[in-house]
Amino acid sequence: MTPRLILIRPAVALLMAAGMLASGVAQAWTLNVSAAPRRVFLHVGNGTADANSGTVNRVEVSLSGAALIGGLPQAMTTNSTQSRSLWGDGFVTCPNPSSQIMVGASYRRSDANNGPASATLSVTSPPSLTSAGGDTIPFSEIGWSVAAPGSPTPNVIPSGSFSGAQQTLATIPAGIYIENCHSFTYANSAARAAGTYNGQVTYTLTSP
Amino acid sequence: MGLCALVAGQAWASPYRLDDSQSHVVPPNVQMQWRAVAPGQGDTGMEAWVRVNVRIATREWQGRSGRVYMVLPRDQSATLEAVWTTQGRLLAGRLVTGDRTLVWAGVIASDTLEDQLLVRLRAASDWGTSSRRLNFHFELDTD
Image (cartoon, rainbow over all chains, first blue to last red):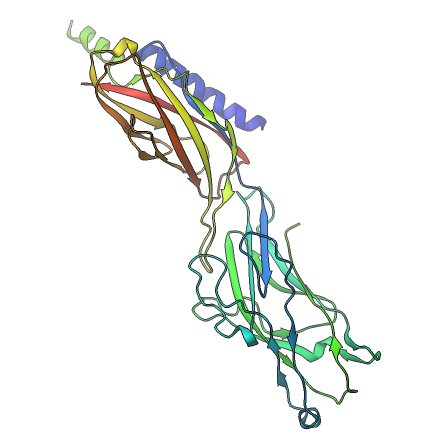
């Protein structure tokens, strides 16, 4: 604050001097403007632009006995309906939301002194999916591929698999909105006890 | 004699700074809000809206013909754009820091020029400071 006032006072003094020369008065309508506060925005699956959304989408796969024995990776489906971008022109970033989860993130700051240059997108997963009977499947059995048709940076979030802990997905520079579609796959690398296995992952965007 | 005449002419030449001390801004303090961004695009900056009740004293210029400009002096921060609409007495327009824009022209026939402006302010996000003070004013070029 103090440096700003030091810069402004001479300017006001100069304007007053000019006014005295011209007509003997010097007035102005003045306005104090504050920069927008730092902000992060993140949506995973169905979301709402510029607002909170309580939606938690589900990604799932049901394996037949043959598929289980076959041991081949199985594509997972989603209950997401988010195909259009939440920002800008509403571009259809994820044309097949039944097999894609849209991830969108942005970080804003008013100037270089207003926080770090980037924010960090991470995801946290528990070690395992669990069934009602107490059986488990390592969360690392679930991985994702990425796409973003029309984007100059379709791999801004790399493909990967859950680690069963917190893992960094991407660095989001200030002033940039990124968007990505994730298609999930169950690795199916081992036979499991029959049952429904559940687990929840949490995506986080932070700017300390 | 010639030199004296030239000096006097410069001291009283247009533009004349006008008294708008009766103008006021609602709200007098405003916080910019982020504008939406599109995927892959750079930062689209911030914006804010204010209403300005303008009252310019013109009594001493009655009968004179001229043009009134709104001025936004350049400050130490990023370029800021003001775009406004009016109730009709003044002209709508656009102005960036360091520039001036015509808001009225004609023969001054009243003690005051009054109008209400709805102003949209936009700026990129490279302020270098968390806040700034904008000093708009009006000046008159006489014919």
